[in-house]
Image 1 (cartoon, rainbow, N blue to C red):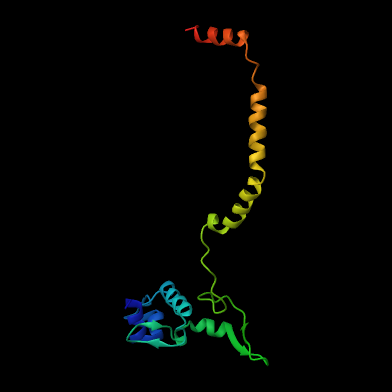
Image 2 (image 1 turned 180 degrees about the vertical axis):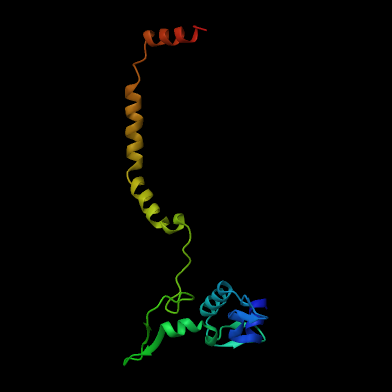
Length: 158
């Protein structure tokens, strides 16, 4: 089990808060980045809302930042849908609404567009290659004694 999970299991939300000890502020036992990763992992695996201390799986909703609890209110409408209402403020932290997929590199993000562009350019490629070859052949001078003499003179210069 990760050390962060052990800290959360033993200390709860206090592991996520800085502590004032001996007239000094100490960092939280679990950083916000690690907490965010653990929370997202629990949401993806479907264990958000419960925490098993023996296995270290899940995330207790009480561990979410208190500031976010003030900023976002969960409401049920008449149809039974859960809606998130933002109460304002710049609270930052972990988003409650949706998990976005990883951004990946630009090369991965525009892969489909590049593939479509290549396929479009490949249409009629055999015909264009054949036209290029015929055009290149047409540019060559006709064979004859004059061309043979020019070739011989170029090679005998040195």
